[in-house]
Amino acid sequence: MDQAGCPRKVENGDDMVGRQRSLVAVGVVAVFALTACTGGADASPDPQTSSAPPTAAPQPVAATVPLALAITPATGKKDLPVSTEIGLKLAGGTVKTVTLRDAKGGTVAGTLRPDGSAWVPAKPLKHKQRYAATVTAADPGGATTTATTTFTTMPEPARRTGTGLYLFDDHTYGVAMPVVAEFNPGIKKKDRAAVQKRMFVQTDPPQPGAWSWTSSGTQAYYRAPKFWQPGTQLKVRLAVGGLPTGGGRYGTKDRAATAKIGRSFEMKVENKTKKMTVLREGKVVRTIPVSLGKPSTPSSSGTMVVMDKHTSTVFDTTDTDGANGYRMNIDYAQRLTWSGQYVHSASWSVGAQGHRNVSHGCVNVSPSNARWLFDHTLIGDPITVRGTGDKLVQGNGWTAWDLSWENFIKGSALPVPADLK
Image (tube, rainbow, N blue to C red; front, top):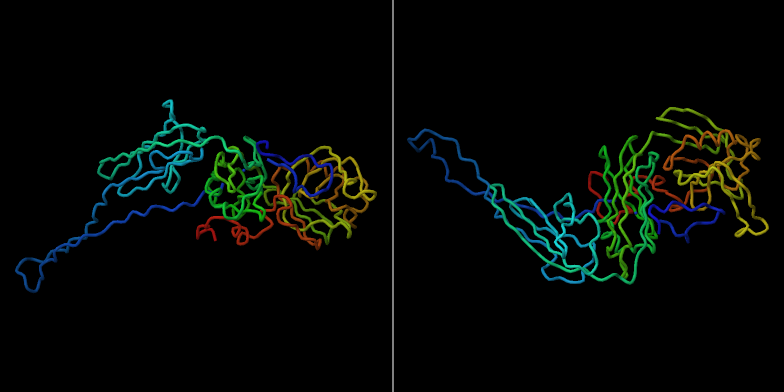
């Protein structure tokens, strides 16, 4: 499966469920609680019975928590996944260094989880190799302690789960671009939490976000409560290479990308008026007549995003519709759903645009308007269609924004922080 697995060129309007397409909620891991006890002190003299002048009562002094460090995996463990982390359990201090070396003495790069519960290698380890870890921690007074372990990784697995990420390095996307992780076959519910813990997203400027899985487990979306701020940088790592994904399968490889969010650009289509209103940075910049799907092939209502763009493509429904199908060249096509809903140029329906719905479900616009839209849109720009009476099906495209935030976070496999609910 190719990195980022962009949607293949559509030759028909069929559902894309069977296709091969080429994945961060930051994992929520239990934080080891460090507790401090308070010691008592002798009472001050009673000013009514003592000849000594009254003095302030001494404040309780926090007892020192002894420095204690334990790490995993246990020494001598064998056949571990190449996704293995160095688990940390610490009291009375902070981790100063984590060093992981391979059998040749080479140093493996990695980073601590934000909660300090583990150290995660920057890339999958190698198969059938011995590793040695050394962790040093220090207490507030500077005293240190060190823990070590050695372990060996497993051979190459026989069964794999394909992984994908719909982002490319150095690309600029629209404000509604979700981070889209993909797995083939899908991840079962009982295995999703472990996978989600290894899916990391960083935003600059910082914006809260969460993951939500589709019912099939083939995709997971990461988004914020609101559209991304223009100019946001997204740094994503799906650290799933060699990760157990359930059913004896392991992730094929890590996926990572650093991308940027561009300007705000939104399209809003109203069936009642047969008009598209285009907003840039919140201001109306164009109003476009449209023709939507006729009663027998209605357009879906909901919030979608531009998934793919083609200056020219071919729509072919003869395989599924037989004698009632059609095959024709289409210009300035922008995909909105897997099932084949597009915004595109339609010279044949210009007379109906703004008045009647005559399409097979697409948003028809004139050639000049189609070209103008094509030149101004980005992958990830949102488009909302209202009033058609046919509701968008979840998973038919990147439908992360068609759910309220409250409903979206219900799809997380890990508890969502209280401040995000």
